Amino acid sequence: MKKKIAALVVFAIVALVIFFVKRSNVKEAQSSIPAPASLSAAHVAAEGKVESLPGYEVEVGSEVEGKIADIFVEEGSLVKKGELLAQMENRDIRAKLREAEAGLSAAAAKLKEVSLGARDEEIKAADAELARAAAQDEFEKSSMDRFRELYKKGIISKEELDAKQMNSKTASASVRKAAENKTLLEKGPRPETVKFYADSVGQAEAGVEYYTRVIEKTSIKAPLSGKVVRKYLQKGEMVSKEVQPIILAVADTEKIRVNAEVDETDIGKVRVGDAVEVTCYAYPGKIFHGTVQEISDYAGIRKFKPNNPARNTDMKIVQVKVSLNEKTPLITGMTVDVKIKPVK
Image (cartoon, rainbow, N blue to C red):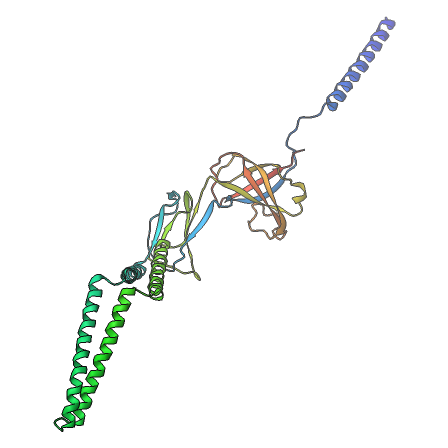
């Protein structure tokens, strides 16, 4: 009996040894198999804000200072690129444009008149004037001899003779002037005269173009399709380059990313391509996924107030830009919590 009990004890001990040896071998085999790639349990926590991608949020202002005549949108309005958002007062500018257009019309008419030269009627009139002047000159010359004889006989005075001589000289001068005028009309305008009036037309055109462009600038249009996210001014308020040149801001709300502020002591753990989880108090229990897209190359002061009161707000931070992997309900300006999970 004692021998049977001893045999059973030995058998039990051997079975236990075999069991623990096999279990140890299984654990060693399992530990030798490489684990699949996964996110590390360790993560870098940070705060951030949702912002528009570069070029997808534009502050819209006016290059023309003055009063806003009307604003056609409100915050939250959906707009398309090129849509009229606001209109500046432009009555004075329009009056100047009309004045410039009238000046251009007059200058163009004068240039046309000068360029065409004299009409046949004008040349014929000049020829007739020359003939009249020549006839008068001939008369004055022929009667001059008679006046001299009268003066010698004492019939007329010296003053009357002098007056007659003056009339004769004036008649000769009229002939020369009429001849020159006819010659000028036949030759046409001088090149410098045409150039003068052409330059006048050019100056008038520049004035019209200038005021046309200024008027175009008084119509404030959407630079991109998106949503009006902020309004800085209202109808009737003044736009001033020194005080307030911006009227409103338009953003494509689907083109967003997260700007996270990572403590400078943690930035060595972060790499471009790391996975990111984004949470927000506005959507409790929801996790939005993203990827580290860009890491700033300088450290600066913190701009976002941390949700964790224990975080050192005096520590410098490095901005990390996070692209979102899917469409989210997040909107620009929202504060979010960020977990950056380096991939092993």
